[in-house]
Structure formats: C-alpha cells, structure tokens
Image (tube, rainbow, N blue to C red; front, side):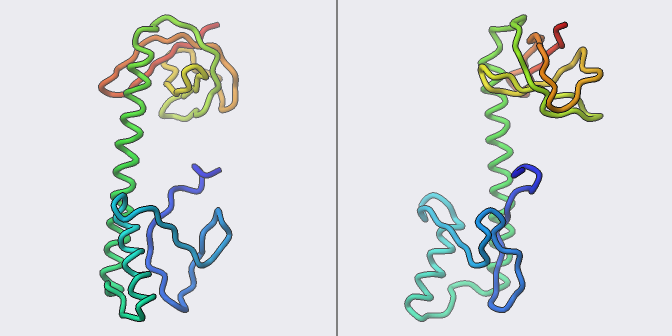
Length: 161
C-alpha cells in the first residue's frame, strides 16, 4: 500500500493554507525531527521551533523554505536510489556463489518490462529471464538462479518446472 501511495515530500505549510495532511497519521498539523547533525530537514525544523519559542521571526523566508523543501525532497530521493542500488548489489554478491541453486519464489511484478520474483532466503528480488510466460503477481513459482551481476545489482532467474 505504501509503495502505491508514493514517497512523501517536504513542503511549506502556511497558516490558513489548505493541505492534505499526513496520510499515515491522519493528522493535519505534523512535523517530525531526529537530530540536527543527522538530517538537514531536522535542522531547518529545529531552527523554526527555536525562533517561534523565542517569539522571533522565522529564520527563513517563505520562498527560501519552499526551495529548501524541494531540495531536501530531491536529496532524499537521491539517497534512496543509492541505497536501493547498494542493496541490490549486496544481494547479487551474496548469491553469486549459488548459481544453479533452486528457490521457492513469489511473483512480485509482471509487466512489459519484465517479471520479478522474491525469494525468501536470502530475502531478495530478481528478474525471471526465462520461463516467465503466464506468470502473474502473487503466483508461487520455483526458480533457479541463472546469473548475477554485482556491479549492476542484477539477479537473474529461470523458471524451474
């Protein structure tokens, strides 16, 4: 469900402005913070709270906050892409010595771009490059590990009948 909703984004919420709120928490007024030395959005939030508590003007103009929100959202998307790539390469490396091994799998994606399965041990996804015809999301299937490419994070399976 969360994947279908898409990722969140940072945004400026001005008083009186109609916003959608936080879907998962079902609240309109929301912020969160960890530690300012970890994430720049948290530093921005904490600076704003500190100014409000001191009854001072915001340290940022609205236009600057909008730009910072867009920048932070983009940087978070970029970091997520890198994390996914590293995880795919790690999984390919973990499976590299198991070419020819057979696994029980569940089809997690089926489209014109390919058919994808998830195996349980180790939990990872790969593409079915042979024997994917007729497979649909949710189908349980037996697959054999055909190939891995650690640099590209590719894991290829063939359907085992």
